[in-house]
Amino acid sequence: MSGSATTTADGNTDDPPPPADTSAGEDDPPPPATTDDGECPYGTEGCLCDVGATCDEGLECIEGTCVAPPACPQLDVDPRADEDSATMVDEVTCGNGNDLGVVGTLAGPDTDWYTFLGNEVMFCPEQPAATAAADVTVQVCVFIECVEGDADNVSCADESSAADSSGGRPGCCGDNQAQVANYDCGMFQPRNVNAWVSVGTTEEVCVDYALSYAI
Image 1 (cartoon, helix red, strand yellow):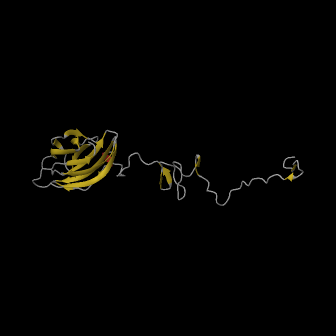
Image 2 (cartoon, one colour; image 1 turned 180 degrees about the vertical axis):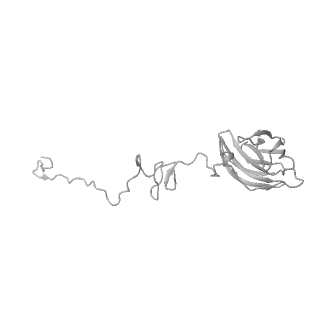
Image 3 (cartoon, one colour; image 1 turned 180 degrees about the horizontal axis):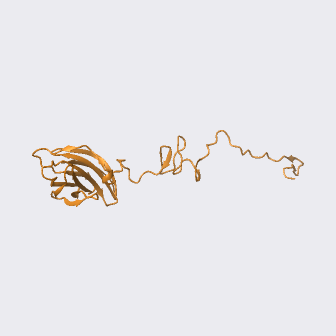
């Protein structure tokens, strides 16, 4: 019979060993977190992480979840991927500019957009411009839209080429810098403009850049 005692050659009787205790103890680790798809073990990608439950090698614990770090860490978090989502920066007056310093990252192919208001000043030429500094060559563009009237007779400074934005705004593009040399907003209209600046690359790079602009 299963579980009965047995008799050895010397006449001694061996009792069967007690059954193993399969119940969980108080010091056992907590059960894994679960998702709608089933088990999600602590420390694995997309699963929970907390004190005492570190993430697997190559993963980071961010806001309680193990995730793979970005291939290209971003300095900036704003989307600013097109004209409509351009980041608004401080307005400037003619003859003055603004240096934003190191402000963004290009995870190429990638383009970042900014927009600012440029105000005319009497006897000032008004030449909207932008310059980007990076470890690689990037394309910089400046596109304009008159606050009153339509931008016309747009010309570009040396080393800039005429171009239109996807939104149909006229402007100029160049390597690391661009400048609109001249434009009109219509007879008797002030030369105040809203300007859009793009900084981009078609190469597969990960590079931070500094940006300055003026009118």
